[in-house]
Amino acid sequence: MPLRSLRLTTCASLACALLPLSGCSTSQLVARGASPLIEHGMAAMNRETDLELARASIPANLKMIEALLLADPGNVAYRVQAAIGFHGYALGFVEPGDRVRATALYQRARDHALVALERAGLPQAMLAGDMAALQQALAKLGARAVPALFWAASAWAKWIELQLDDPARLDELPRVELLMQRVLALDETYYHGGAHVFFGVYYGGRAPMFGGDFARAARHFDRAAEIGQGRLLMGEVYRARYLLRQTGDRTAFHATLQRVLDAPPAGDPELNLANALARQEAAVLLNQEEDLF
Amino acid sequence: MRRTLLGFACVCSLFMAMAAHAADTYVLKFATLAPQGSTWMKAFEAWGKELASSSQGRLVVKFYPGGISGDEPDMLKKIRFGQLQGAALSGHGIGEIFPPARILEAPFLFRDHAEIDAVRARIQPAIDAGFRANQYELLAWMEVGNIHFFSTRPLPSLDDLARRRIWQWQGDRFIDAFFDANGWSPVALPITEVYPALSTGLVDTVVSTPLASIAMQWAGKTPYMSPQPVATGIGAVVVSNKFFASLPADLQALLKRTGAPLSQKLIADTRRDDQKSLAVLARRTQPMVGLQAVDLAEQAALSRKTVAALETRKYLSAELNRQVDAALARHRSGVK
Image (cartoon, rainbow over all chains, first blue to last red; front, side):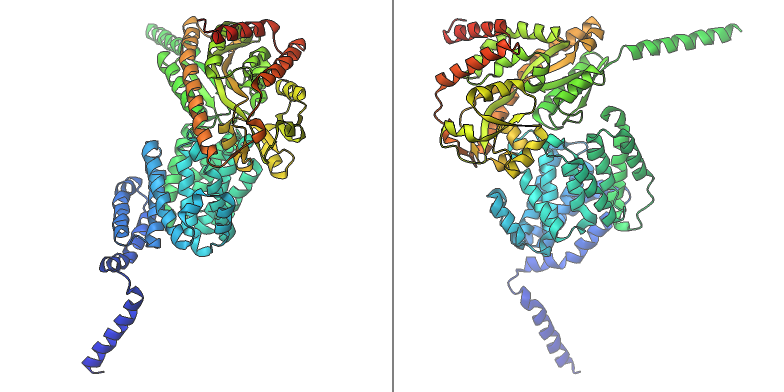
């Protein structure tokens, strides 16, 4: 092929490739080009086994994602990654020592996820409006919305959990429940059965008079363990922290947390960081056992 | 040989010192329905820290929040068996210890918090004595909030309440008497069954505080609310007499000394949360019209008849009620 033809073909291919992006600014194009880097960055972080290294490096990664979002605010993938990142950082590294700062970070995680949810078809105004209308709007969402739904609900629930002294936050809890119920209906396997862990905590962490249901909680934890094949240890830590503490079952509490500490590596390197954090929390809870029972 | 004896003596003294230290540490196992992270639990935890620091670690409070120890009758049972030593209770639990104190939550008796505060200040010694005579030391008085009606349906007139299925906490003789006097038909259920009962229609109306209604998620099912409170729910922080008596005098004094500021904080925080909860509910509830223009004088008179009936049944105390009436008259006349 003559050089000129090659150049023309290349130009034509480029033009075709850029056609769908014709509405994008240069900075958006650059931001989107960083997508593989961000995805690999997230994967590398998930594989980290050194908690101190993770603690020190996550903030820079989060700010990198937020920088990209400044250039490309409607980028759903980055919004979800920011939600996952802020939620995980707050949960693993901030909440144990600074609940006020963690509260703000959970809110930030939720807000990122809500932008992604809006792009998936759920306007933010619906979340504060009539419950029946919210339920109808959620019913229209498809599987594409699951990541945004799951992380929005997870971060929102933590945001509420750290503000149980605020009636306005308590009043939002049924809305979070609706979001997570939709996740359960669309894809119960998302994030190793994460929606089941959520409902395990939801029904297991409260007395029956406040809507708790211990048998239902146990079924959700069991289903999460089945879906995740027991590889994600945090579900079992939450079973002990919420359900077994609430039911006063000290023997099971101790045995469950000890199993987490004794569990072999998951085999899936993407769970390294999550499981290291789970082991850390299991150790902390075991140290508190005498005070909790 | 001498060295061995000396060593043995040293070990013995060390052991005895350790034993004495261990014996000097008192653990107060304390239960509450308030969940971890709630306003009350924050106040209780601050109180627990103060007790530990002021006693140099000799008095330690171990909390069982969020109903971990069961509901209030369960808590009282565990206190009797020595599994717990203290608890935070609402009027329901107080009714198991010293029912006459419930005069302070009689419907339509008081017009506002200022009247309640003035009357309680006068009768507090009698309430303290009543708890003590019934095996409990009252450390701090509290309130659970203003009590309203919440309903799944509109209420065009007060008479319609007679045709409503109103939830009543199972086994609560005090509330039962007021329902009876008004000709209302209660549906007696444990508190755990109210949420499903509102869903199925077994119950269509509840009496509750705004905060409890939100926290228990009843509010989502009850879009109608009485605009005015019918009473202010009472509460108490108690320890068993047995535990209190086992403490050295300085720790008894510490518990009593910290009770008053704890009481003030709990009451102020509860009143603040009540207002916040009302603001949340105002956005999505409609008033129960039938309770909008209640004849307060008529309701107060009806309430007094019920109080008299409860005196006859020895649930309330005629003598304490006389003191309440005198203190209320004194407050209303402006006499200090």
